[in-house]
Structure formats: C-alpha cells, structure tokens
Amino acid sequence: MRFWAAALAAAVLLAACSHKGVDQPAKLAPIKATLRVRKIWTASVGGFHLFNFWGFGDSKTRTLLLGLRLAVAGDHLFASGHDGVVAAFDVHTGRQLWRTDTHVRLGGGPAVHGGLLVVGGSDGQVLALNAGNGKLLWKVRLTGEVISAPAVSGQLIAVRTIDGVLHALSPQDGHELWETQQHMPALSLRGAAIPVITDHMVISGFANGKVLAVNTADGSQVWLATISDPSGRTAIERLSDVHGAAIVAGKDVYTVGYHGTVDMLALKSGQPWWTHKASSFRGLALGEHAVYLSTEDGTVEALNRKNGAVLWHQPALRYRALTAPAVSPDGIVVADFQGYVHWLNKQTGAFEARVESGGVRVSNPPVAIGNEVIVINDVGSITAYRVSPRN
Image 1 (cartoon, rainbow, N blue to C red):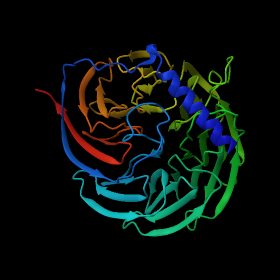
Image 2: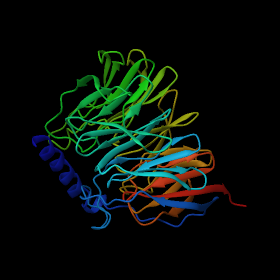
Image 3: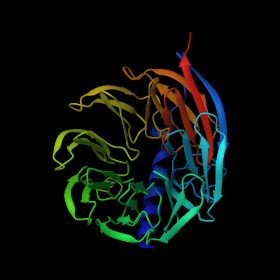
Image 4: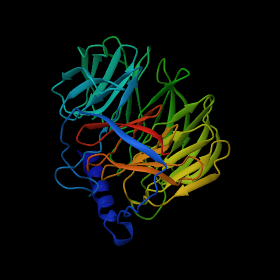
C-alpha cells in the first residue's frame, strides 16, 4: 500500500506539472506529407482502463499506463486487452486467428517465443497460452502487479513486477526458478521495465535508476550500472526510474533513464562506452546508424550509435506524451496522447506523414513490419497502415 501511495503521488504531481502554461501539449501544425499512409485493417481486444494518471483525455480515454503492447512472430500478431482478452491476428490482413478470454485484468504483455505466449495481470498472475490456438497452459501468481511485458526464451520467462522484483519462471509450468530485487525508492513513476534475455543474462532497469544484468542460471549479479543518479531538492526532481527496455545489439547494450542519460554499455561488463544526458521514461529504438528516443518533454532525438552525438532533434511534438519510437524503412514512427501517428525522416527529423488513429491515447510503441505500421491504443483498438512514397 505504501508503494501504491508513492506511485500515485508521483503520477498526480507529474500530471499537475503538465497543466502549467509552459507545459501544454504542442498544437499540431500542418505538414507537407512525403509519404502516403493507407489504413489496411482494424481490430480490437477491447477493454477500458480506469484512471488517468497523466491528465490527458476525457473519462472515456483514461489509462493505467499498462504495458499491453503488440507482439509479432512470423505472420502472426498478438495483442491483449485490460479486460482479459488475448487474441492472434494475421499481421497483413487483420484476420482473427483465435481469441481467448482469460477473465484476468491484464497489465503486461503479450510476449511470445516458439509456441508459448505469456501475459501478466494487474493482480500478479502470469498466464501462459498456446500461441497456436490460445489454449491456457498454466497460470501462477506473483507478489506484485505486472504492468510490463515479460521476456520469454526456451530457458526461462523473466517478469518484472511493480514492487521491484525480477522473477524467473519455468516455461514448462511457471514454477519460480529464482528472483532478485532492487531497492525501491519511496517515490517512483508508475511502471516497470521490460526485461531482456540475451547471452546467458537477463537485463532489466529499475526505479532506483540502475540497470541490472543477472545470470540466467541462478539470478546472480553479473553487473549493475547506474543510468539515472537521483539528485535535486524535491522528490519529483529525484525521480530516477529506468522504465524502457534495454536494447542489445551485438556486444553493446543501449538504455535510457528518467532524469538520467542515454548510455551505450558493454554487454559483458556494463562498462559505459558513451553517455548522453537525456530524460525519458519510454525507451529507445535502434536504427542502422542512430539511436532514437522520445524525451520526457516530447522531443524526438536521434543520436549517433558510435559516440552518442546528437544528429537531430524534433521539438514540434513537445508535451504530447509520445510513445517510444519505432524504426521502419520509411522513417521514425511515434504516436501521441490524441491518437495521432507521426512519421519523421530518419536523416533530418522532418515530418513525412501524419494520420489520426481514433482519437484515443497510444501509450505503447508502434510496431513496424516492412512497409506496414501497426498501433494499439489504450482502449485496445488496433490499426494497421501501409506506407508508400507519395508520387
């Protein structure tokens, strides 16, 4: 209860800050589109969320800021709604392949590996389903709320709960293999990082501003890196959460913290190769030559992957509560609190296209698959777009 009170206090204070005159969401200026964006299908996994921690939208679009993002495996797209529905769709046509009502208030997921699909509940339940037909295989209950997607491999399922615990579960039956925990500050943002499983390690960020890498075999610490170091006079200024999933590319790890930095770390040791001061609670996207992020104030930035130097920044979407970016062949894609989806040029950050996806906030990042982009909004509506150059 103390944790919930702290999380709620942080959310309320941040929402209040967003209503100051200087922090009002930027109005969208007309753009000259260079891409043609066509809606190709829609679907829904339904479900209202109950609270508006951020002060955007009306009573019909309130959100718990849940980690109900999309997952893709081959030609299948998986989605889940807060009311408990989990469904699979053909990624190109939107045809529903199966639909299961778990009767659990879902908060995180789905995540898929092989034939296993995993989702987490607001009551701490973790459920495993057959990815081919949606049949429930097993479910277990953890001690904390699950509001971010798990990570799944053949060895284990990694789940971050909101109380600061990283759990490892058996893919076969869900029994706990090990757990490890980081100290939680008295005040934190509502959220939990998505774990990453790679190279015999599980990597996850925590609300104390640190990123932890542990051994998949037993949960023992491999390294611990500080991404956001709490500082400032007020509790709000000292917030230092690492919510976004780390990105592993070869021997490097990229991560970002709130009131912290973007860091490129050595995978084996956690040693930083470069650091760029930034603040984000959404996470990163990785391109061939650049790292992309949506900052705390809604600026979209591109950084050089090799040294962290700023390549460009786009401030025209400030305070529009952007998602983390997605990288597509056609540009950088972000969505906002009014349901607008924006395409930015990879080299310059200039706007290339914009569409309105339904007037409801999009909190989780778009998914880019070739020339298609798919978004899910905070009431579980899914929209797929096909992108082509404008002649």
